[in-house]
Length: 334
Ligand code: TRP
Image 1 (tube, rainbow, N blue to C red):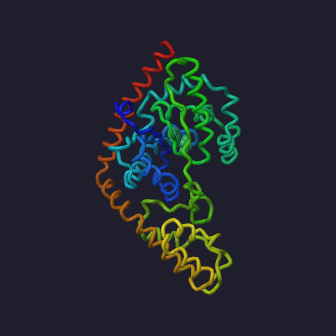
Image 2: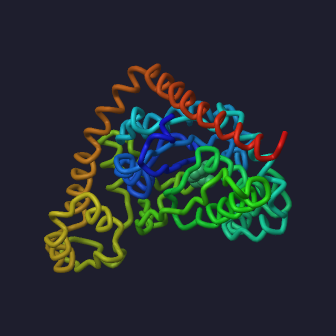
Image 3: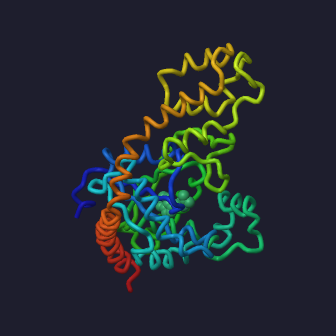
């Protein structure tokens, strides 16, 4: 009965399984999760049903992508003893709670969601927008509330979904169990990291083909960084550069803090050329990833360990889900 006896507040963290993760995922989410698991009781959900919203034609890739993503989570320091890792589709109660919640939300409310509107625009979904896609924030509310998550570490784009989960929790409690609320009202915990650029200067994203993967080998990282764009006005060594618009400088800021003043001075004066600057950047990133790669190699050699960890996490999640659904059934009276 961990949740009853634990004094730590409960966090629910989740990602869609998109396969191998990149440095944007590491800096923007994973490193934060690793820190949080000490002070909070963290549950980590692999939101595989969520990938169907946009990728329902590619179901067969999902198990492999789940394996790769969980391997990255473990390599980066998610401790499955402290923080269960489980798969959404393995816990069927999510589907039932989603159904019950779906009656408590209007269609108009879902269509007002700014994150959904952005997805529709960015992916030109207008005529192809599915019923399941419009409703996925309700499924997310079920993911969070099933485990009575009090905090959800997310980026800006997910805040509207957490707000919806709060509304659903409030409505359910008021309607069915006003004297003994079943659900807490979860709050977003904003991941405070400015957007992390990919090697073309845009936001790092798999769909943009500009990623540095956590699992990339050193030679791959060096090659990708060598090709990355820099200040277009700095063509050769001797030309003064503008570190504040250079993505390589953003990487130094994150992975090479000690040398930042020197790099800035060298870039601005022109004494430091991009080739050397990039090589030093690659070295630091490779150093940072070395212990992660070592752990990853272990799991690559022992894939059964990853499957066992997920099975254990599923077990802990299922226990919680059964307990919550018993309360839900009592509240609704059938
Ligand atoms: N919707 C989230 C995303 O697209 C993933 C997600 C699903 C999630 N369920 C969750 C995140 C529960 C936090 C908690 O990134």
